[in-house]
Length: 222
Image (tube, rainbow, N blue to C red):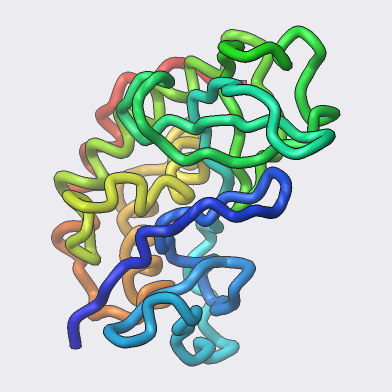
């Protein structure tokens, strides 16, 4: 059966973003954690059946990702229109536009043209990175995303949805920073494939990807 990934759309709700069809937390299947969309059901939240409760081998859980952002101007009263750049794009490029409550942004970043790095958690703008760590995270995401897209990509969608696996980047980076070895990271990647995506094991790809992740010379992160 062919899997289609929902391309997403901007939500009218404040600060909400319909991300591309990312896969949810391992061992979960709910609208909160994302969805898989199947032919004929790409807009109705076609969520696969819940995984068995004993699916717990994977310790990697979906976390937020960072996006370069730019304030475009006022939206409805009390809100600002903010554009989130797509992965690998500069902030001025075409991207998702969301409505964000004015109070969610520091006063210095409320003017049109203000640029910053935003952390996106699920479909919401969680917070603004106000220091240099934001751009450092962007750099890390770009490098890890490249590895996941080239060597792993269990769904085969990296060419049309390059940020499909972004929500796994931070926990994988922290595993590497904690000194996890190739075997441990490969176990986690393969558990994502089997338990989170319901696919057959892709152990060889997981091991190749784990070796590449361990070999990355990433900057220290907070």
